Length: 231
Image (cartoon, helix red, strand yellow):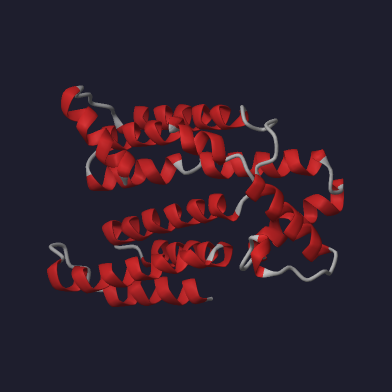
């Protein structure tokens, strides 16, 4: 959302018009820019948090107990992600490289929902600026490579928010259900993902009361979102 706001300021000064087809070509290019920018950190040293999380998951896979201070309050998703890689390639640098590459791909994909949110709330041009700013934002470029629950939490949370708004805009209950699934995965990855439920419920209250474009099936839509999230 911050990227979208900054993009609006840029758009006011440098107006441009992009067709829908060209916008997706540019968005694909931005995705690869984001991916290449993050790949530059694949060979950097292990971050402290990344080392703790990697150690915690390997201990879980070995059947050991992991205490809260290790850094993973609920590492279910990380176990699912890391287990097949570690089983196949061991606990060495090869597994570290593969898992970091997965993190790069996942976080680079955030360009797509960022573009989508910009398009929903403003226009295609704003969405492209927002996606580009996210792709090159220094903090994200540096830390998105690391194997950390926060990275995957942001991926699922961003997709959940985008699909939720798209489902409302398109009046599509199936899209809302997918949004709920993404929100559920965000909660599995990290407990702070529960804040997404607060977002959904707040939106429900205000949309029902002040929404200009009422959806007759809005209650069914919200039930689909919440039930799929809980499941």
